[in-house]
Image (cartoon, rainbow over the protein chains, first blue to last red):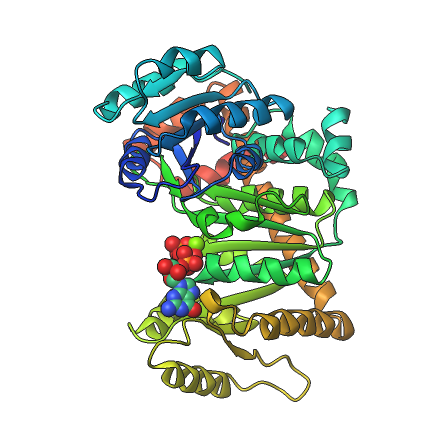
Length: 135
Length: 315
Ligand SMILES: Nc1nc2c(ncn2[C@@H]2O[C@H](COP(=O)(O)OP(=O)(O)OP(=O)(O)O)[C@@H](O)[C@H]2O)c(=O)[nH]1
Ligand SMILES: [Mg+2]
């Protein structure tokens, strides 16, 4: 029986912005890197995202936000994860995030913030290095 | 250990999720936990659903789940997607169609990759079914693409296997090739908003007639659906209930359960048996030498295996 730990990642697009090309590129890159990627699709509420993260028992939650609503959505996701006792998950945010907001997101527990130009190689590397070694 | 058993039995979502991960990863403590859960299972109606990629399985599962919730049933879903044999990674996309149920506490959805080993998949999914069953779910739906034998086996291990077909694209023929038509207890012709529905139904009916079902036998019904418009879903759920009724009244239910546990027993004998024999050879320091002999063509693999088993039996 294999006892290798496969990294599981939930990729979600909270909020109202309607295109997910970037998220799909990242999804494929993570699969190529040997991870299991659960994609939840567009227009997800923080509640739906956190519930999916729990049921899927993922190691990483990747939030892709282009709408500018990150300062409303991300804290809510983190708060709900805490409430569920799942705050050991690695939370990353991708999308268009103004420089000033990055420290604010990091202060509430976001580990990686990836702007539009980030290479998928760096994202893969970041996840490998920062995912918590449970199990 | 006791803790996680109690939590799963009480339906705790995190415990269920964590235990499925442990099963998938072959975590050392997991067999003990499964042993505790096993006696608490057997109450769920397990439905398998298979069909060509993109035929609308997940959309159907989504709408069926909504219908079951209306009928007051709790639902567990296991959605299997292929793992890339090259990278070991997977894109698990079935959940996209089902996210409207994400926050319903009486629905639990889990995506699984097919991962590596032969037989490993059926074991992991059957363990996941056991876990959801023990957690009190009334209905458990297992979705797989009917590509490989082990995926067909998974669906066949359910109480009610459903095969999904769609009009056009010669999918019907495809399905016959893959040998999945034999396992259908219900056939769904989805995407009935498309052209060619009649053709699929006629083909199916002809095939079923050829198979020749006896008077008292369950002849698989054909249900036409448009999953995206919620058409035909009530009928499908009714047919699934009828099928269970049939299984229960005819004794076929017990037979299915028997067949299933027997095949699980054989799986485990295979799995554990290999370990026992190999470990004994290794302990005796003969394992490498035996492999060397086969490489040199001094003994063929079958004879080597039979000899090894005999030796273990003789102690
Ligand atoms: N026209 C039409 N499209 C449908 C119907 N049911 C599903 N679809 C569409 O078919 C596509 C595939 O649907 P899924 O439910 O993901 O199919 P699936 O069989 O689960 O796909 P895989 O899991 O990838 O094999 C989606 O774009 C659906 O919206 C239907 O009844 N009619
Ligand atoms: Mg699907």
